[in-house]
Image: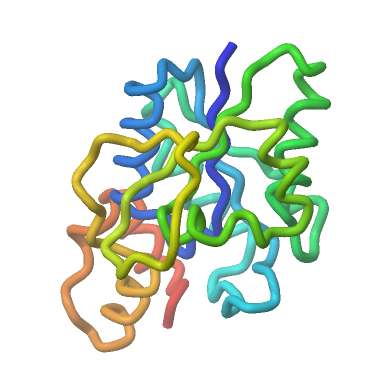
Length: 189
């Protein structure tokens, strides 16, 4: 079995995340993609606005119509800052090391993955799938990484949160049930 692991804050999950996962699933013949919302982000990134349970719930709602997606609560249950190596190691342990693991990351992360904690171990345990992003090049990306053949995604969770704050249109950037959940639960107000 080929398993994709897609970690992130998903604050909120948006149509770009879903498009990336669908294309990774299709282009790399993944049997499933596991979305793993982080409990909290590492020190250099700003903390998520929505609490971990809200972000996991939004993932569940956004992904429930796809039978090849699932949501893992492992990082949330672990609490604190989670590294990709923790998430991948948990999945390898749960699957008794019988599956090939693909880590799905954004292009921005691909430029800096060699600086991540335990990056050598992470790269030894996974194949990397990179989603292109609209950003200025920041160095070199490992030539052995796999790239999703997709137009660069021009949406971000921070843009959605900013649009909500500024009362600009944002409903077209998320699934309808996510829009409803955010509005009804006043997640970003």
